[in-house]
Each structure stands twice: as structure tokens, then as C-alpha cells.
Image (cartoon, rainbow, N blue to C red; front, side, top):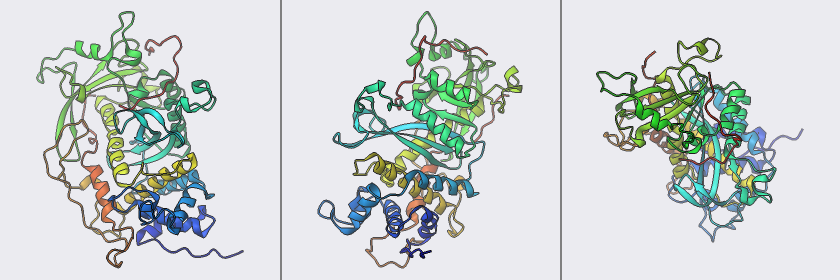
Length: 484
């Protein structure tokens, strides 16, 4: 057997991480390009992470440089398997005690879009883009993530193809709605052996009956958001909406809260907030039914839109008749709110992955190259966690003990009052490199990136108080989701 040629090592601890992917690359050029690509993604984001930037070449005029062309070929034409690389990435996360998922975390489903010009790039069309909050020309990805109060990382992803790009539109056999794609991602997470307490998603998925039916058929617990008065909740036949039912609940102040339950939510930036939660009963929902409806808010008197959640879950209430035979541990109001609060990691992570690691900076057109870029970004982000928990970094601490010194917006949009999160010093990736060398920079960037995720992290577990189906439309169907 021919001996495999040695690959030029990546700087510092990045080499140890990259070497674990070497069996997936059959050629020396692939192994070298993998290191160069991930290394380039970790460089400070002083310019877009295009191929010329990743290779350290001058924009436009440097596009034909050998280093740029090598990365271009690696991304677009080379024969490596992106799904196999992602499977290896998840295997490493699941093996590491510091990042191994557990049954108290959640599986978060979400979609997010970014602007892209033209129409020749696969999946690009005019559609709603979460990053800009409106319809524009761009590309959307549906993704799954695992999260607990301590960390989060992406699992799988799929690009969404709008119906207008397919020959037969929505009737085309290749068309998949976002909730349908989300079901595939749930199945992929289960197949990968990722444990979780519940599937969590926003109202784009929570108001989709067929999506919930699939989760129920698979006996998977979920906590999903509901639109206050839209979608399937549009009033008909005198049936109320969630917000209307919540407004009917009496509120006599904190001294006489019933039927509301007081919850104290503690955030990573150190501040605490008092929330109130209550069970809703209407249209097939109830505390002892298969589907529960719950309202959680900071002010039961006014139900402010920005800090009020309307949730549905199939987790049984403690002490209910369903609790004995449900097959999953029951969840009180505090637990349901805790689980949905973990969804905040998605929003925090989007800012870091997109602003620092160049998620949307790719300049390739094919579906294969786009997926490869996204999964390489996931590899770079997973390397950041590896650095954070690395015993070789003596000053590194787990995220939960970072000092709460942040100025920014918390999970519910409110501003916290403490100062900016201070980055910790860490050893350089290329500590002995000459000044000006185009190397990966330092481990300070990955650690600072993750520190930015910590400040607005979801609340820790909080203390709280200890069926029939809702009305369905005659022909419910899966429809494309929309990111809030």
C-alpha cells in the first residue's frame, strides 16, 4: 500500500482538530485545502470571507491566484462528501465530554435567509429573509441545532428551494416545504443518536398541524410557539384565538396571582426577570389534554407583544392523567418556559456565525458548493467550542462561569445594564509567526466569539408550581414557514 503523503500542518491546535477529518479526504490537496479553508474562516472578519479573502489574495485581481483556484476547486469540483464531513464533526462533538449532548437539552429547528444577487445561484429567489426582516432576493437554509443552557451547535442543514425555481412549482416532486424539511432534520438528529428533551421551534412550525402530527406519530415531545391571532388561529365560528383566551384570565396582582404562576428567569448577563405563566383551555387544548396551550409573559395585565409567548406542547402536566402513560417525564410551566427559552441560542448564533465566520459570504453557485461552505463554517464553529473547553488553554473557563459584563439585548429584546463582555487572553494559534503573516490569527477570536454567545444566553432552570385535539381545517397541509 502506498504511504499517504504528509500534509502541511495547520497552525497550533487547529491541526489536531483537522487531522481527525483526514480519513475523509483521499488526496493531499483535499486535506490541505480543508485546513486552509477552516483556518481562513477563523481569521478576524475585517473583510468578507470570500475565496480570495480566505486565501489572503487581493479581491478581483487575485481571483486567478493558485491559492484561490485551489480553494475554488476544493469547494466546487473536488470529490469529497460534505455529509460525511458533517457526520464526523458531530461524532467528535458527541464523543467529547465537554460537548456531548444530553437529554435535558433541546433540538431547535429554524430557518434563516440572507441576501444574494442574481438568479443563477442555486436556491436563490425573492423570498422572505429573516436576516433583513422582509422579502428580498436571497437564499434560505433550514437547520437543526442542539442546545442547553451551556452551549449550542448546529447539527444538520438543508437549503430551501422556492417553488418558482422548480418546473412544476409546488406540484413538483422535488418541492419541499420548510416544515417538511424540518421533519427530515429531526429524523437525522435521531438517527445520529442526539438526545433531547423536546423539539423547539417558532410559530412558523408551531402553527403547522401536519408538522405536529408527524412529531406526535414519532412520539417525540415538542414545545412550539403559536401565533397570537394568525394562521390557523384566525377566528371562525366564534372560536377564540390564544391572545383572546389569555386576556380573559384574571389578574389581581402579584399578591393574588392565580391562575398565573410566578417564574424567575436568570440570564447569563446576571440580570433576573420575573415572568408569569398560565395554562389555557380552549379549542381542544387543556392542561390535561394531549395538547397543552401555555401563555408566558412579563406582564399578565397588558400581555406585551415583545415579551409574551404563546406555546403549545405535548409534554404532560405533572399530576395529570397523561403523566403516567405519556412515555416522557412531565413538565411544569417553569420547565416548558425553560425549554422554549433555549431557542434564543439560534438568534445569538446567527449573529456570530454570519458576522464572524462568513456564513453568507460564499461566491459559488452550485448546490454542492453552497452546502460544503455551510458545513465548513459549522466545522469552524465546532472548533471554537473545542478551543473554549481545551485543557491546554489555562485561562479558558466554561461559558457558565463567565463574568456577567455585557451591554446588549437579552433573550426578550430588553437591554441589560452591565458593561461589555471582556475577551479572555489565550495562546496564539501561530504564536511564533512573523508580524503580518497571513495565518489563522489567535485563539482569542474563537473564544471571544463564543463569549459573545454567553451574554444573552437562555435562563437556567427555574422553580415553578408543581385528550382532545384542537379544531382542524378540513384539509391541513404543510406550507412554507416564515421566520419571525
